[in-house]
Image (cartoon, rainbow, N blue to C red; front, side, top):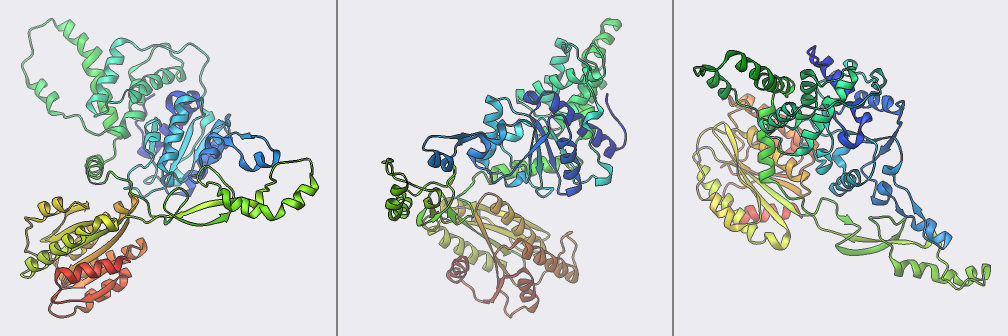
Length: 557
């Protein structure tokens, strides 16, 4: 069953196999996640699912609780005078095709996960259309999806879906031997997988793969393929090869040769084969992804209040509007009664025996609130050259001044320093003045000016801040005389060209920015970069902490 062909053919084969396994046992495997931004990939999968024996239905991220799991229909209940319940989309039969999963609210993902645990649900097919390097935002729902495939590096003409091409025979599901179960658990631990759910998925997948091949006993190939499908994308560590090498270099113990070979064939060798099979399908940049995910979890673990200014649940009350109530939009009772009151005589004349207040759906108003978002000011400071200490000193003062008022204004402050071929996050987004003073106490300065690196680091941090639900804003303190490019190589022309390209990228992200020129004279190149990013340019040769803080505060308003 293990497939060792071309990588695109291998991924296509495994994806079709995963889809079929989900259709065989949706309770165990949950579903499959496709990370892709290509419409051709999604169209082929959706067409294949719609023609499968289960059929399919579309789930949008904007669906509320009543749309997903059902509930009381307020419009029909008011019209009928009795409670009328409606069924949710999850209770209907067919593949649950979730589109634009990167926009799915966390509460909706948790609700789907809870529904999967307590009810029979058909398998999910989730399309994550986020950027290739963005982290999965599905939360607890992602853990219940057995399979994950990144199709961004796969040509759409090299990917095809055919669920009906594999058929399983009706026979008893084979059992796993204790040695095979031990091996599956051991491989999971070596890849840093400590949840029992993936282990149970691998065991079940190996049993089904044995059925698909028409055999009576689970083979090594079945376990290899099942581990590739379920363990590879969950790996948070890579088994070291030094231990195996040291064991091979150690002198063999005087044991019976026949018993030793039998032991290796049953335990050690099969486990090594499973590990190598999972390693073969790991992404090439798995180490970078693991490191980035760990650092992101450490720095950003809050959701904030969100970017949306208008809320249906909390905040400053706004005038009610006519609308359809749902799980997120509550009825404004007073406004609804006030609208229905002038029509009561006319409505009573139509049904004089009815003593109730006649309320029509057109009378209903929904509540609205206005909520203020938390904001993050990202200072990116040029720490190079002779004037670096002065710039850093004023930047520290501005950070401390803003943090003194951070709690009342719901502002966070972050600091990035760039110099000598590197850009470091010196202070992650924080509102703690004590933590800021501790992290800012010892900052190095001097060297070249990697302006493009400082701008790129600020944009990356702003993207993470926006993803966490806060509103980012950037302030650059520099003389704009970049002389180190993005590759870390010296050269003024290439360095300024890279900075201009980063500025154009920043304009597409629509992050507010301000460039404070701290040089002795104004720099037209820096003004041009600010214009390309869509930010403001200010020349303040003698900028102090109070001026920088006031500029950043006014820029946020």
